[in-house]
Image 1: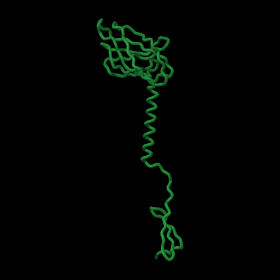
Image 2: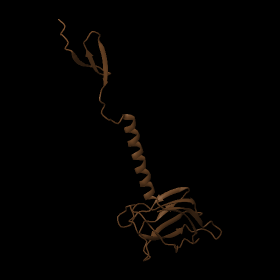
Image 3: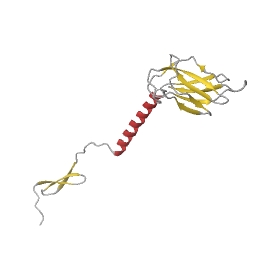
Image 4: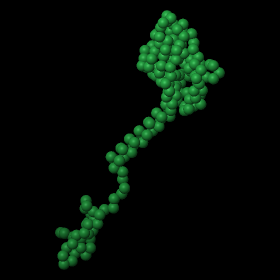
Amino acid sequence: MPRPLSLLEEESSERGTVIVSLSETTRTFYRPRKREFRMSNNWTRRFVFTAALMICLLAATAAFATQVAVSGDLNRDGTLVRYATFRTHQYAGTISMYLTNNTTNYTRLGLRNTAGTQFTYTEQWDSVPNGKNFALTSNGSINIPAGTRFALNGRMGSTWWGGDNHWAGTLSF
């Protein structure tokens, strides 16, 4: 048996709340449902992607705040060359060299501090282009502290008098 309707009754539907009134003519009114603010999956994905991208860009910027083109000539007899230009590592992180021009045999480079002591392992380039990170001799870490002052040490495999002794690349610190 159908239940009797009162003078004013509400029913829920997908579109909202239906208000049914009984009088001589039946009228139907829709009151829209209150919606809660909820970020759609599409906006959530965009936000997360944008935030992750910004973090990656900031990390890359901090890790490689400065890039300079460097080059030099090494002694053909293989003895050590101590370059005079000192640089300051602004942020904690890696110091890397991307060599684009190599000497006749191989190029070996390391970093020394202002006291004259080499504080990284020597990295060797047999072929180019090739990039390498300098690692600390104290613990093998490639994370070099901020504020470190450094200059390059270099040597090459000995060669005859006319052999190519020039190297070039990009230093990132």
